[in-house]
Length: 333
Image (cartoon, rainbow, N blue to C red; front, side, top):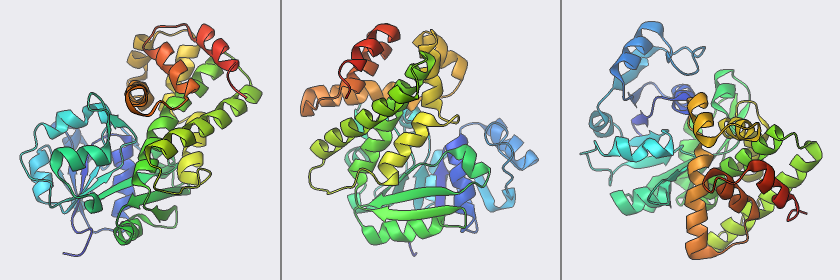
């Protein structure tokens, strides 16, 4: 069967729902794994996801829902993973089907906690998926704006550029523009790090630092991101000013739809980490990413990353945001 063949989506949240909307614009039908049967029943009855992006309607006759991940995997040639990174291993624990012959698309802008692996590395090392069969979706694209049919841009990355191009065509529409690249590692790490920096931007907003400082913070964050990615993957020559890197950082740090910025803002206003997480009722990927990247950097790369270090001190060292950000201001230029 010609790539991408039958497409399956893993995940039931807002980003998975947005991805389903995008894919169904160019595909006759999809398979869709959701964990909860009651959500599937409500989806079929209402014609939309009952919990996320509720204004986005679907032709449910074109969706093969299932709470059984193995069924979706068996019936799909290409699997798009769009779950929060902390839940990925929980879903995969149920997996009995082999992934080696599948195409894996990661729409997860996070890192696997405990493993400290980006998604492409995790699927390659743990599930023996060939690198040429692993793709990554990146770029500045909030699920909420996809739901509102606002113009969005996605970058598809794969070591096999032709495969990236073919999959990009499956996502392309009048409201979704696509580009392709081979920088899988760079895009994954930039997608992880921008969430960390968005928390920093939110904290500073909550502390009432102004636009002048936010501009300095994010320009330093961009430099920090570039230092780290270029150290991790020296072989690829990338332009960090492209939208998949810089654009994604900006939208995540400034947008009202950004969970990570919202989480940071709550911390800046005085919420504890635990209370902020409880009140959000959604995952802020940057919380987990901070610890993972900090451990990766400290053990292997030793890149100068003062903003990452400051976020680690606040999120895991219980240092006051007021104190830590004040110290950070002295190291930024």
